[in-house]
Image 1 (tube, rainbow, N blue to C red):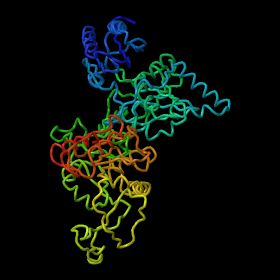
Image 2: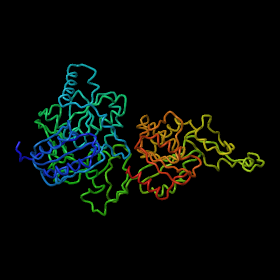
Image 3: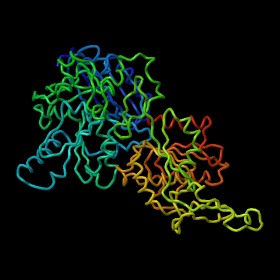
Image 4: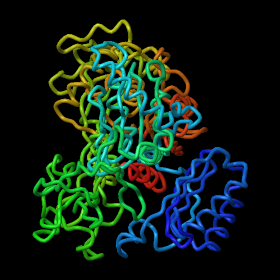
Length: 607
């Protein structure tokens, strides 16, 4: 290779970085002195680098990096290539300048704002290109020989985005290949959650472009516990595989790359991709055509580009978006764009909603849909009235839906004798007609609850027992079945808001998320004056669901649910999954500033 030849260098390293600022200074000095352009991302957990420049400069950079013991064992991918085809390609790929940034994650693993990232130390075992090839070859030979068993337990999992897989992927007739069909990498955790049964008990072979995305994703799969231990990843990714097997081996098509090369192929010239419009063979992304809704890259052949410049990707087509529903970003005047705070959820599909397209134009934006569970001895109507101020202040971003709990309670009244220490008149003189009373309901009831008969009345127990909620431990299964019906008939819902006993019910539902997946799907909970029941489902730090906990601080005026009780409920959620708002009021949901602003901030994360 000529020293004046241009090249691209890619590498990453997960390691504990003791002094990020010092490392940032090194990259700033070294890359600028060598005239390198591209992206450098640093975090306390490692580095992720894609830079371009003269090959001689890139080789000097590698030597300087290798002198730091932190980078021992790093796989440096250096390739000669042409300069960027044009300014647009150079700009989109980040090769018009040098960008060095300190980030929280080297690659954004999840768009879920409160999902705790897995420990990369638990990542799947690395397989070299030769080992990876050998596993696929063995599976193919088993199939050819008619041998049963292990090959059926092997699956290939592509950790890349849809537009990448459209121009190239691994293919083995004897091994099932799972293509999540995601817009971006941060949608992968939701796909894994929703398709975990396809991975359980299998030997999972993962691959991506250069390897970094498989590190976190394989750790996430393995974190699911028994049945998910056997996860393996292609070390160095497709790039290393194609270097080892220049004829393509089991890889078909081209490898999409995130630099100005755009894609890298093997000696096999067969084209896997197809034009989105006419379906002709095509795999060239150099024109950078994008979906007018979600901005994902799409394949549009030269002929179809001449006919139209408005395209809708297959994912947006699947979810009923059409050309003309709103303009592309390039064609929009700045004043016509909605403010970030006005962006709304398009649907509650965990994959689609986590990568929501920006909504433009004059069409009404969609809102978060939140199912509201009332407290003990309330009903949908009374809770809706008590929450009117909250609904009004959230109306631009959320729709609150109220339902009655399934357990109907008897009417109660207070006798004169017990209220005033005087003689109580006969029951019939003081119990109002049942038809004039609104039904009172509960999500959870006492073990001795036997339902009610028509016009059932009882005298209230006095004095009021503030700990009565601790004895209401039955009725969950019936309430859960009822919620399945609500989600089926009135869903989808983005979240659940529970007040008092409704919050306890919502927390129990969170604890059952894996078991009820597909029937009751939601993205977050808001638990107001909540409490945890002494049930096996509740263990400290055991619930993994984004949650907002709202309760009165100590000393407070909430005489029914103490702050200690609500704080304990918050502790049952995994670290990083919960946000707490404490207020100085009683048994209510506060809607004054700054509390309403904090509630809006939490909800904005899901828009």
